[in-house]
Amino acid sequence: MSTPETVLSAEGLVMRFGGITATNNVTLNLKKGARHALIGPNGAGKTTLINLLTGVLQPTEGRITLLGRDNSLPAEDITHLAPHSRVKRGMVRTFQINQLFDTLTPLQTLALTISQQHGLGSSWWNPLGNKAEVVDRCAQLLEQFHLTEVMNQPTNVLAYGKRRLLEIAIALACEPRVLLLDEPVAGVPAGEREELLQTVAALPADVSVLLIEHDMDLVFSFANRMTVLVNGTVLTEGDPEQIANDPQVKAVYLGHGENHAEESSHD
Image 1 (tube, rainbow, N blue to C red):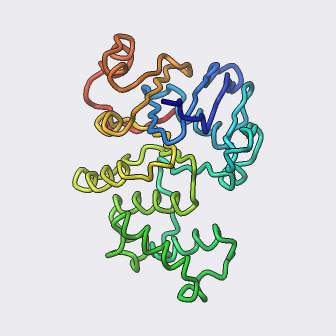
Image 2 (cartoon, one colour):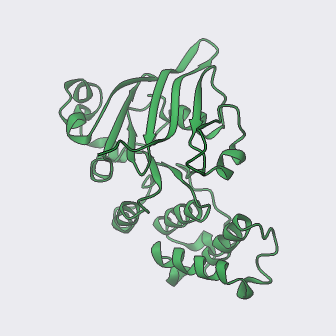
Image 3 (cartoon, rainbow, N blue to C red):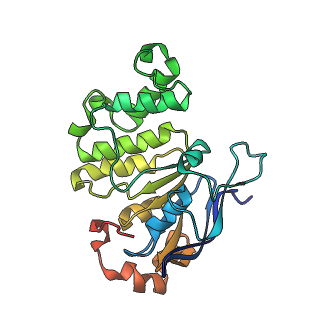
């Protein structure tokens, strides 16, 4: 069986803030169609690494490459590309803290995103009913993310779990090949988590996902590959069984107790 292609590669990433090294020679390869989790205790450097991958930060050293949209093209060096340029190339991120337009409804928000994706600019609301591709894609995403019943409610009145679902729906509306999920269940009440967990598990197989998460139940049910980051350095990488049984991981992270699902990252 052939090995899946690497769609996103980080090689030797170093990020220094003055005398502090936040990421230290980090190498990570995200395979095509992967369900890859990035875990580690608070302060491990997870958020810094994601900010490097998405272009929010520029690395002190190292290189980031993204597989071309046309698989016949070689991987492209995106180390110094702006965040919006990475989105255009198929890398999309959701955020640990919800970032939505409060006064727009889920339908309007998705219509706007899809219209921009299709090059329709800001003319999305007037001809919405005349643009079949926008209407159809909105309907698909609203159903997929359990938002149909609330599609005409302002976002600011939605339950928090629905807001997180909408955020992931927006990310998928951007037609990503690489999706970076930054703590999707952070702050979501227990009663709203199951719907979100099921939706994350059902993400399209052709989208390569890198998940940053403290909730170990979600991590181990979702990921088929895991990278453990400690003090800005890759401690180990492997499949979930290898990680669960690794004595180093137990010592520095998993063995710290059951409170990780309640933590919020401050990397």
